[in-house]
Image 1 (cartoon, rainbow, N blue to C red):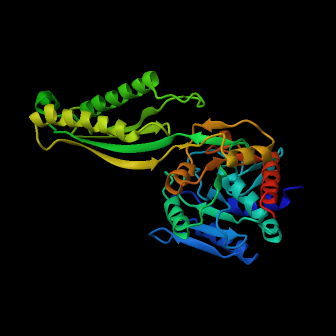
Image 2 (spheres, one colour; image 1 turned 90 degrees about the horizontal axis):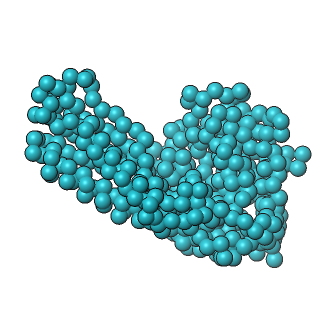
Image 3 (cartoon, one colour; image 1 turned 90 degrees about the vertical axis):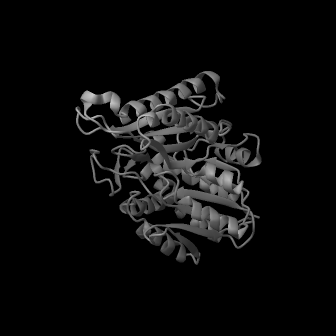
Length: 386
């Protein structure tokens, strides 16, 4: 089997339960030891708890430039999912490799690691930088330390490939995401005296309705980017909780909403309008009954969109390697927007596996995708030879 080595590495990686709320250190130490076997030094960037870490390593000397191969090591939970086999034991069936993270995105990491020997043996003209992060699945929160390190080193890579599962298709854009928690503090009283209270659920509903108005406005007025399945920014409320018993006017309601915005759209302007509407509710209505009432916002997730030109050399180079002239933009977010925004590195999203299998029970990556990813990596390395 052509990809026997990468599949065996994937077997090891899937065996580490790196669900986002757990430590990823066992997996990171495995990669560190694996690279040590090739005399490659890794730098680990820990979180505040020291239970999670990013890993950064350079192959091909200390030269500037080169390319970054980036992937996240965490996976989504398996809770309440029915699997046909152990999610953390790689299982082969019907030319598919089943396991949590097989597609998203340990398959890419396995392909990269399987080519380290080739990277070392080959006389690279430019370095290859490996950048593996934690906690991407909960809002791209772990990669910031990794980006700080790359910036501090002044490496100035020519471009970055984020190996999220795109079925080895070239992705040049995705939307950004801003998610917020909202707490509405009302004023309780007996429901028979409802006009004397401030119903937190009612005011949450007013704010949610306004958020939906903004969503409709975006769908009608844009901005638009027709390369997306949904070519405009969207707003969506997905969680809500409030009240204790029917005969009490509720003094608390909490909900969460998100903005998935085009890279050229300004989420700050959207949030400013939401804040202004909330302030009107507080001042003009809620405080007339009780000045103890309030509406507060807390940011949950914040990562930028990605948008790069199809005409730049890195995109042309990756397309040439894949012998594919097409590109696309996708609905899911990645760390690519942060590489582009913070480091100004042209960033392409391209990796083995399909996003259609990600986050689901019986997640899998097709062996054919592992092979396609391996061939791509071989050609990419060859492009960096003298």
